Length: 192
Image 1 (cartoon, rainbow, N blue to C red):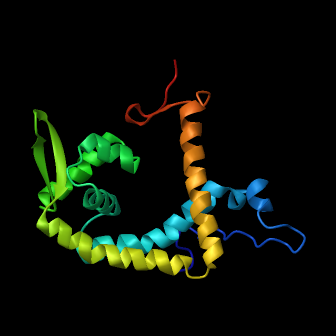
Image 2: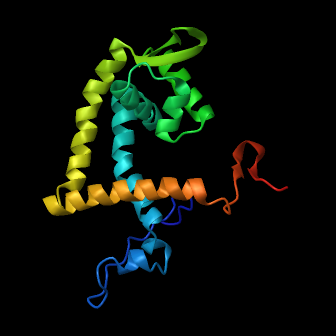
Image 3: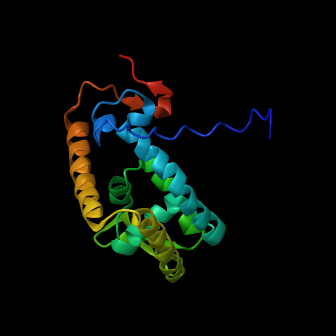
């Protein structure tokens, strides 16, 4: 609708490489936001992930974050909340909210850990397993549709590249002490 200032303009698509630009040059030597790897991955997740959100919320009444927890619990039943948060890369507060919501929806259970009643483990309920078993094939198909335009060699290369980049990202987080910490609960960056 013309003049509608509430609708943000869509982000520009990455410009195609010129015939003289070798493949990968834009990623290796970014000159603009559209050339940055993390920006492009974020855009991909925003666009393709919107379909997952629609499936989760419209079809099953759960959020994408709740879906992430359910997928992890389907793979690893009986997981403590702290480990679940760590595996998903979420802070404990967000994980706690998602757990509370899934408990209220009766899609997961929380049981005392054997030997330490102060600790809990989480598992899918039969209703939660039914949601997982109905939703997972649909999300899997969306992921396969994204890869359908790539050759088998490109998919294998992407798989290896993602594994390598994940390992590198974890090493960077562990070693880059020069990057300031955030303190979101206190409204922003930490100043000594």
